[in-house]
Amino acid sequence: MSFTSGDIQGPKIGAGTAILLVVGTGGFTHAAPVLELGRILSARGHRLALATHKGQEKWVEGAEYSFLSSVYTMGPPMDPQVESEHYLQMQKSDIRKDYRDYFRPKFNVDAFWASDYSFLKDICQVYKPDMIVADFFVDSAVRDIQHQTGIPIATIWPQMPYAMVGASYVPGIPGFQVDALSSEQASLWTRTRAALRPLRAVSAVIPYLIFVRQMRRKAGISYTLPILKKPDYLVLVNSFWGLEVPKDLPPLVAPIGPILSEEFQPLDGTLEAFYGAHHRVMYVSFGTHIQIPTQDLEKFIGAFSDLLNDGLIDGIIWAAGETQRKLFNRDQKSRHGSTQVGDILDNLDQSWFFTPFAPQRAILALRETVLFVTHGGGSSVNEATFHETPMLSMGFFFDQPLNGLRIREAGVGLTLDKASFSEAEILAKSRVLLQDIDGTIAQDVRRMGHIARVSARKKEFGADLIEEVLFDHRFSLVPPEATASESSCRRRPMHLQTADARMSAWRAQNWDLTCLAVTSTAAVGYLGWTLVKVLRSRA
Image (cartoon, rainbow, N blue to C red; front, side):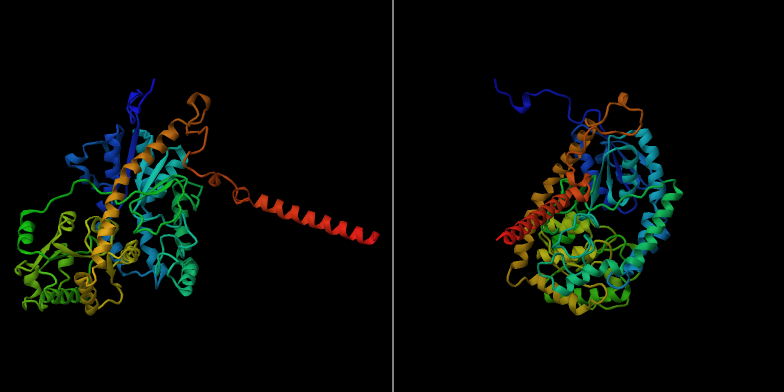
C-alpha cells in the first residue's frame, strides 16, 4: 500500500499556537514586513496578536488586519518634538567624520527598551505566546524575554544584522561598511580603514554601553546580553542576495526579502490624470523624516528643470510633507517655463505635481515612471528594485548610505553624497540613468527585478522557519510535571543552531586536536632524534 502526504491525517498545523508580533518605535515601514509574515502565519492556523506603541494601533485598523485577535499597547511613542530633533540629528550626523555624533541618536531609540521590556513581560503573562516575532528595534527587549522565559523569538531586520555573521571578505564590522561592500574590488587602504574603524568608534561606544548598563540595572536586570557572532534565535532579513553581498550563513539567519504585500494602494484620480498626460515621469520621495534644507532643494529644482528642458522627462511627482514644503524657496524661478517654485508647490505648473502622500508602489509599478529619486530607505529600495525602476539615491543615516552602495554595485542606480553633492552632479547622474546609452542600466534593472520577484516568494520560507523554531521548541520541552521551574526547560538543543555555538572555542576550533597533533609530532621527532643519536653512538 502506498501513501501520499495528503493521506496522513493530523491536526491543523497551527492549531493551538499563539504568536505575538511586536513592533517598536519607528514608522510603518518597520511594521509592514512583520505584519505580512503574521498574515501568512494566520492563514496557516496560528493565533496572532500585536504589541506596539500607543497611537500605532491605527496601522492595523483596516479589515486587512482582521487576522489579529488582539492589539496590546506597550507605552507611549517618541514625543513628536523629540522625534523631530532625533531625525534631524541623524540627518546631520556623518559616520565618516564623527562617531559620537553618529551614535547619539541611538540613545533616544534604545531608551525605549525599559518600557518595551516592562510591557512585554505583562503582555506575555496575559497572552502567553508560543513564539514572538519582532521588529529589530525591539531586539534587546525580546531577547530578554527569551532569556527569562524560554519563549523562542524571531527578529526581522532590514539588512544583515549588525556585528553578526561576518565574513573575511567583507571589510569591517558587518553592517558598518562605508566605502566598499566586499574586499573584491577594495584597495588595501580601504580595507585598512574598515579594519581600524572600530577603534575610532570606541569613544562613542563606551558611553552608550554605560547608558545601557545603567538602564538595565535600574530595571532590576543584573545580567548582560552577550554580543553574538552567530544568533541563538531566528533572524530574518528583509533583503536578498544581489543587494546583499552573498556570504555563508548559519541556519538561524535567512534573507527572505523583499517582504511585500500582494496588494497595494492604487493611484487616485488625480494621479491617474497626471499619468494620462505624462509618459516619462520622475518620482521624488525622501521619506517621512528627511527634511532637505533650502539650499539643497534649490539644487534639485534647478537640475530637474533642466531634465524637463532636455525632454528626458516630461513630468515630476514629488511627495513632500508640510514641514518639507515650508523649506522650499517659493521665489526661486524654475528654468523650465520660468515658473516660480511657489506656483510649482501649488500645482499650477502642469509638469510638476506635489503631494503630501503618494501611493509609492503604484507609482513605481508603472512603466511611465522612469526614475526614482530617493533617500535609499530599505523599503523604498526593495519596492523600486521589485518594480524595475532605476534609482538616484542620497542616503542620510542608518542603512541608507549602505543601501546606496548596494544600488550602485547592483547596477540599478547611482548615488549622491549628502555632504558634497552639486546641482551639476544631480543633472549629470540623472542623464546617465535616463539616457542609458548602452542599455546596460535597463538590463541590470530587469535582472534585479526578476531576482527580487523570485526572492519575494521566500516570505513563505520565512514563515516556514518561524514554524520550525516554534514546533522544535514546543516538542523539545521537559514536561511541566518533571520540573518545578516556571521557565521553559529544553530536553534537546535547537535543531537550527550549529553545534559550535554551544561549545567552547577550544573544542569548536579543534584546538585540542591541533595541540595533540603538534605534541605527537614533537614527541615522534624527539624519539627519532634520540634513536638516531643512540645508533650513531654505537656505530
